Image (cartoon, rainbow, N blue to C red; front, side, top):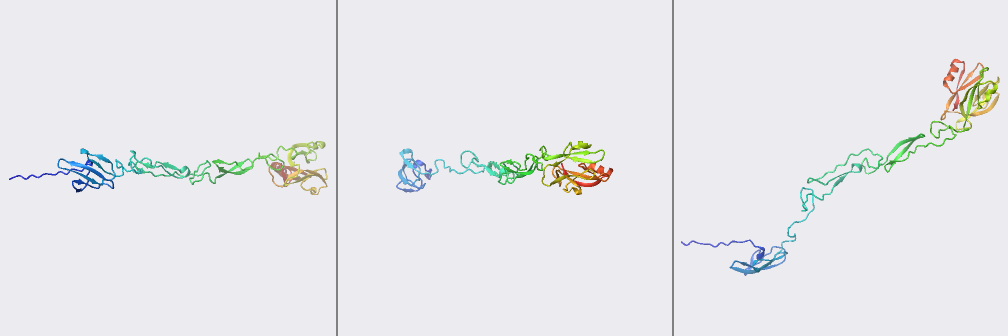
Length: 338
C-alpha cells in the first residue's frame, strides 16, 4: 500500500519586512490594518513558490526595507520607541516617573504656628509623612509666638516700680517698654519726698526752721526757741539744738505754731492764735502738721501743775516718763513736726 504523505505548511509569524499583517486581498497580495492610519506597500517572496505585492494600512510608523529588495512602512503608535508614559511621583516606594529614583521630589509637610511649627519630609520609606506640631507654652516677651496662636507677644504687661512708686511695662517687638512708675524728681519744699530717698525736703535751706529746747534750773521751765542762742540770756541750759523742725511757711495740712507768754514768766506753745486765753501772743514760730505727713513725727504735750510748765517732746518714752514719774499731766498729741 502506498503510504500517504502530506505536505505540512508551517505558518511563520509576519515580519516587518514581509509587509503583511492580515487577510489576503487577492492576487497574491497581503493587506491589513495594524494601526490607526498610514499606508504600506511592499513585495515579499516566500521561497520559490509565490510572489506578490500587497498594500494595506499600517499606522503612523516609519519605513523600512526588507530582504529581497522589498520595502514596508508601519506605525506603532505615538509613545516612542520604548513605550514609557511619564507620570507624577507619589509616595509609594516606587519610581513612578521613571527617572531611576524612588519617591523623589515629594514636598515637605509643615504644620503648627509659632514655636510649635514643624516641618518633616513628605515621604518616609514609601509612607506619606504625618506632621505633629509642638506643644504651646505661656507667651513671653521674646519676639516669638510662644503660645502658638499666630500672634507674637500679644497682650503682655507686667508690674514694675521705681523708688517713687509702681507702674506698668508692656511688651513690644520682643522687649519690655520703660517702666511708667513715677521717676525721682529734684527735692522741693512741699512736704513730699520728691527724690524718693526716704527723706522729706532735706537739704533745702530756709524750707524748715529748727527749734532748740532749753531748761531753767531754778524755775524748772522748758523754753523753746527758733534762735539757738536766745536762752543764753536768761540762765537757761541748752538741752537740744534742732530738737524738732517746723515749716518756715504754710504748707498743705499745716497750721501756725504760736509762742505765747503767760503770767509768772513762763511761755506756752499752741496752734491757737488766742494762746488758749493767755495774755501775750509772741508770734508764729513756724508751721506744724495737723495730720501725720511724710517724714513727720508726733509732738507730745504735758503740763506740770506744780509750776505751770508745759513740756513738749517727740519721744514717747520721755513723755511717758514725766507723766508716770514726775507728776506731769498728759495733754496728748498737739501736732506733727519733723
